[in-house]
Structure formats: C-alpha cells, structure tokens
Image 1: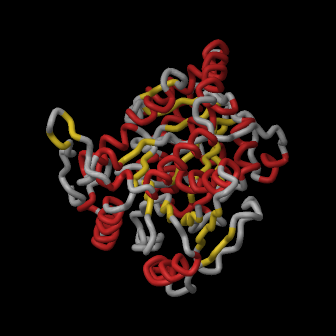
Image 2: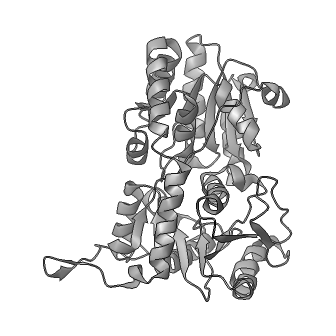
Image 3: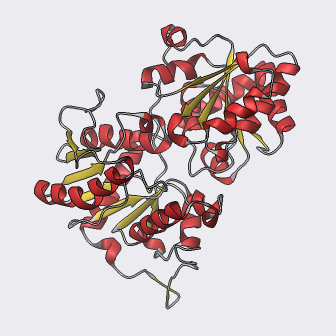
Length: 401
C-alpha cells in the first residue's frame, strides 16, 4: 500500500497538540506494523523534516510560501492533488479537520481518502455562528468534505455519537479508534532546569483556548496556594491557540504570577520529563474528543485530576479523580485531595498504568490498517446494513447544525 498522510506543522507547535501526537504516532508505527506499506508525509511549504521521522518515511513539503492566509489553501487545494497523483498513492489520510483557515483544508484527490474527525467541538461546545464568518465557511466546507470521505475515523464513542447526530453519514462509515499512547518516563532533570521549572509542581496541559479552561484553572490553583500548598503550576500550552492575552490579563489580576510557569513548543523528551517530575496532572477541559494528557499521565503513573465530562469518563474510567470544571472550589479540593492523600495517589498511579496498557499504539495502528483495507476494498462504499428490514439512517441535522 502506498499511503499519504497530511503532516502539516509537525516540525513546529502543532507537534505537541492532540492532533499532532496522533499524526506522529501514525507516521512512526504504521511502517513498523506493516512492513509492505510505503508512507509519505506531506508537510507545509518549506517545512523542515523532523528529527524523529524514520528514514524510510518520505517527507514532502508541498506548495510554496504565500501570504499567511493563502499558503495552506494553495498547498492543499492546488499543489497537493498534483503531488499525490505523481506519487501514485493508493490512499490518503487527513488526520485532522481544522477550523482556522490558516491550517490546511481537506483536499479533493484522485485516490481514496480517509479523514479523522477527532470531535465536533466547534458545533457542540462553541456556537459556530458566533465565530468569524471566514471560520464558519471554512469549517462547514471541511465538514462536508469529511462527510464524503471514503472512511471517517473518530477517537471516542462520544465523538462518534455526536458525528452521527450532526452529519449525514451512514453509521457503518464512521469508526471509533481510540488513540494509542506510548509515553515513557524521563527522569532527567536537565529539562526542568532548561525551562526554569522548580519542584514541587502541578502540571497543566492544554492551550490558551477558552474550552481548555485555563483561567478557571488559575483561580482554582490560587485557592490551593491560599490553603498553604507549596506547589507551583507549570502550564504546557499551545502558543498558536490565539487567546493568550485573555489568560495574561486574568493572571495579572491575581497574586500568583511568580508561581506560574508557561512553557511552549517542547520536544518530546522535555515533555516527558515535565510529566515525570510533576506531582499531579490538572486537566480541567470543558470539551474533549479523547484527551491525550490524562492518558499520557496514566502511562507514567502520574495521578490526574480531570473534568467530569463524557469523553474523559469513557477514556479514563475510574482511574482519575473527576471534578466539576465550572466549580473552582471543587477543582481546588480535587487537587488538594490528590496532593495530600498518599493512598489516593498510589491507587491512581497504579490503576492509571494498568489502564494505559489498553491504549497501545500497536492496537491503534492495526485498527487503522483494517480501515484502510476496508476502504480500498470498497466495503465502506456498500449500502448501510439492513436492520429489521429497514436501512439504518442517522438522525442527522446536516453539517450546518
């Protein structure tokens, strides 16, 4: 199989996002599991090859640099179809459906196309009509292309249910494949020194985006400080999320600024070190498709305090401490419980490691390969299965919601 994967931005800030980690795992594990597979990673114009990419995976920057709002559009709509045809691909996989127009749109190609739609958060959490018109148009266009793809992957049953409710896609063409996590401890403390991180600390992982709930997280952390806990807060955030000024203003109004450290664009070894030496993960997100950070924490035995939302309940089960993400007092109490109760910490640590073993990259990769083969064999193009003499249909509202 000759497989193309959209790898836009993996040499930069996007690497540390959930979508970036998902694509990274595909590119590193697919060629190992299927030795007959030829993988080509299609990058942004001029994007350097990442050091972690195996030599046997080709790296193809596509298109040319243009003004910021045109580069992705030209690369994926005009240049990519030409490159894909020249490379004679059997299948192309778009591992993300973006909302912002400076990210790549979904292409229309001459080969079968698989799309991963991690979630429908712009429809289910935000109100799409409240976003700038350009974002509304871009996202709806991407959703229509995703709905017409040869196969649609999502990362949790919660997200699959939302996709079937919102998009007109036959249920048999939408497949849940839980993310695989391969996240080992890194005990080297040099990464902490490089990032000016002092122990003990709580680790927040997310972005400046409002749904990641960072402002409330800061207020909850302030309550913890007022209760006498000595821990600092280290926030690993995606710089490109675009809402940094709001968080900075909120932090400036508090008296905890010197105890909060923001870090961006971490190489994986530094990220693993920050997880390894933390006392707890704080993940108060208001909406998720899967939630990488809690599972990464589980893999190394880091107790996690997370939002009580359906996707995280599905992924983490009983192996995290759940809190109301709208209640600052409840979040502070959850952190205090984990930090102050050795028995609870030990239980969450042991159960987390056990749970993470269910989410292996190999299992995730084999499920992807199975889907690819089903798409190439035309099995997902068949009519939906008959149920009690009637064809099953989703109760969709269409991509405009």
